[in-house]
Image (cartoon, rainbow, N blue to C red; front, top):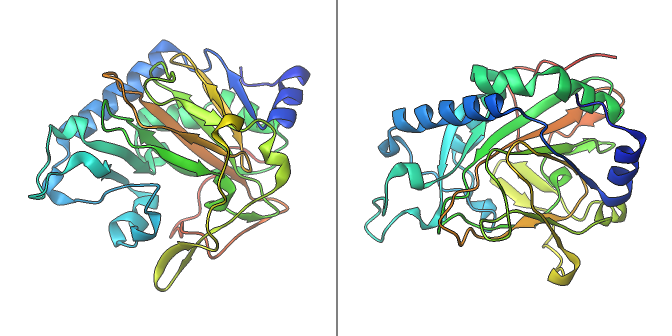
Length: 280
């Protein structure tokens, strides 16, 4: 499992993404979802009111966000709170995502993230000493699951030369109604548009986002258990969840550590170096 065929590699290199159906077993999906259900149950929402929005990422300058790189931290949807500052609905339906170290801390997520099939996949893509820099459990809540604006993963996890690959696992079916991924096929060939930088004042993009023609995007509708492999320069997005069903997903971002340099201006600044998936 995870070893790509020449046809799959050709599609990925040409389109900038690849769907691998039934990549995760039903058991793997269930164990991750059950563990997240328990984590959310145990979470005290009064301990944080950190809101995650891809529209206003320059607001993410609090230590809770920065320290999440080596923790399991909870981020709320923009529309989760009323004018009085209290949650409008149960916490289970109010969280945008949990990140960014599930793959290191939580056994169910660690088992999948460091599995042979993930390593085989990264080896197929030519990685020499890959490390997972972040992991996220994304809820895409019914009705309030926020949109993710068009972006490239290399903007946030920049190496010189660029090596980021996104691995997006559908834990539930993802379709147009509940906010599946959309991408511009082949857009990875046009290079990186902008970078997301951290300095003493916080985080910011080095330039404004270009506007995109929505007609260029295609939906990537997938069944639960499917993995979407995303080139670091692929322009992709997702819209608000307008359905009554959630669209849970688990995403990993991997970079290489041989023949490239991790940029010091990236928002992720770890105290402990991540363990490689393998060394070849």
